[in-house]
Image 1 (cartoon, rainbow, N blue to C red):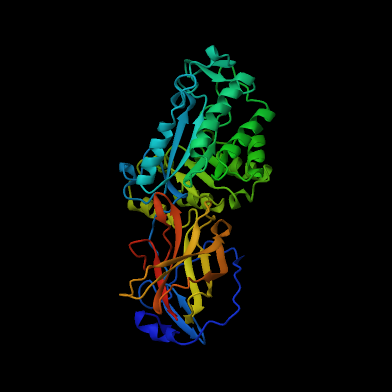
Image 2 (cartoon, one colour):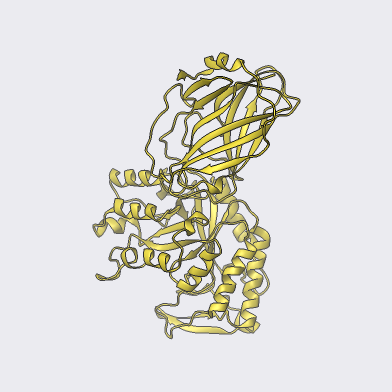
Length: 485
């Protein structure tokens, strides 16, 4: 190995690219070792080591141990934004979670307030976050079901909850279903193709959580046919959005995860909140996932956790925070929502959260990149890379892995950005080897061009953060140089 700094450019000045390069791009999934440790390749910051192998060069960039946010995963804010949440206490957050009632979205019959979600999405973007949201039609107080439903001809259920008399739409009723379908279709038309939206499938039950527990009388769930229609409606209207289904209702969970959804659980940390003989973590979550044949659902859709109570209550009850976090990771979690509440006092709890955030969701590190020492404008340049996902889940958005070639100083030429046509959604935990053939423009000037890698993010986060040193101001990671002739 030889030290790789920009003084090693001389190493790159010999050799020509062999003719007949393939234009195909391939990726291969390596071993499933997602817990991987931390190591450094050495060398100058951000560049690592380089080796000279005849007509090609291989660089091994330095790994970073920094804690950072990335879109579509991580520590979630709850009805708050990363730049306005005092309880976040400078923890990185790449996702904001919001719930919207039908009443708030359609306060009068036919008047759907798209600006309500549009404004939330814009604020999330400004904070560098994606948006996950759920629509609710019933709850534990007024303001969930629109008060105009009955007068519009919808059949509604009336029930008591906590001393309040409330209503919920009967989605088996054709008129109610038509109105709900119109609402979701409007939301889908406006937000269904946004690249930074995730959908928590709701609309059924108290708080959209697919149950009507503790109501008097007990309100029945819609028929299985209608519950499937609710899932189908979300998939139809949000075809490009990662989606998840609440874990409690088995038939809907089985159906949704069978279509490619992940799942969401809202009582992480329950080791005895409600009973001395039963709790969600020991007696429900793993069992429901297995019964729904959803053990591999995390490979296609995200797993989202919400704390049972808040973390402070875990500590008050004497629960092992590390054990709870490891449980969330073992089930391939991408999100944890602590309801934007303060962390428990004590540096050990923040240390635990920072440990979690280096494993939750995806954490991508470039281990090595190989390319020719020299190439010719107008031809194709082969590159091969070894990546490792140190997290416990893949990315769920179609981010683009790109290579930027920056021209020699003073040349007047513009950087060239080349897409590798790689689907990073297939990058499960562990090692990923990939190859690409990059078509170089014939207009490239002769000289030494800087080679950088980057993964494009979302409107609010132009480039993902990699677990590598050397990130520049634009989010790119310069790693090498190539001589262009």
